[in-house]
Image (cartoon, rainbow, N blue to C red; front, side, top):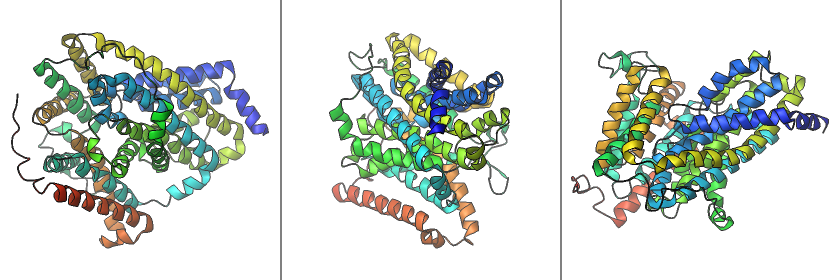
Length: 504
């Protein structure tokens, strides 16, 4: 109780509250701008913490982390331009809802579910950090492959009645994911002698190109507006209690999954959002509605990716192992002040640890209000004519792609994916399978090959591992059932769907 009282005094000091609010606001703003994210914002702020005491500095960095994870969903919903990679899934249903004139409702669901997911994960972090960290350390390459494979099976469901198209685009995404240096042998693959591809295709660059540039080209060609009828003025509309009750199981499941996945070292919020979305589709009574603009398609990824923030802090604080890219940067914040995160920190600096716990509760509450403010700010851009707004988005996308690695190669890759996204949208191919395969392809390949080496190249050994075997069995059964259901109800699901659609 004495430690909690000290932490309470540290966090609810007016200056500390100001740092937390400023950090959350900065994180949301950075997350909403394509090409920027909480990792970059946290790294930029570390030098500024030199002049602060350790508690204030770490509270600021933690607040930026919380806010940045949510911020990307604002631009994903309003403009189909994910501000951060973990928000790319939110755009699958958020942008169609915005185009239907329900941008305010979509933003409200995203803000509410992000806050719930964040608070849930912090509660778990607070209560059972050491236990969950021990469980996470039992995960090895077979378990990582099983998680990636389970999320990849989502491609079959997202295909709807165009399953062959979804599989084709998914395979293209997996092929693109192999470009670059082979993770096992160090040999260059599919670079065609161009140095810009040696590091592989950065999925953030591909994501900006396929979603943002592709949408700009298609909208410019059609001459339509970015919003739906009567949707020029957007006012964030919070979901009612009845609407949240309809989403309760989806939110709870995504919160648990996001927290558990966040705890796994090196996995992070992006994978959590994809798996949260895939499980929402898997458990839904109407999976065919996902991707058309439904609340469940926003609630699942937003709950999962924000739950991953608290989860990723568990191995950082208890073992000194970063659970994500941003927490790896936060370790630098600890070291700046001469601290080494890990179990000894709980013994030597318990008031600091509990201050961080309490600050993340406060940061998630502040995120609720910051989200409303920033969403209102960004929604004002929808009042512009698309002849002005489109080029502005294009400039932001180009600057964001260049800023990731200060490389013109990324800009050319973004343009290429923009053209690919335009062609896919024009001929009714979903972009979602491409992004899912590109994001998870590297994790699936590397964990499969390392796991095969671990198990003496015996693939059946994967199934004999309790956790990996269970995940793989469920994923395979779901995939078979999805294929069976489609063929049972539509025997010609593959036949004829590859024909060129009429272009109006």
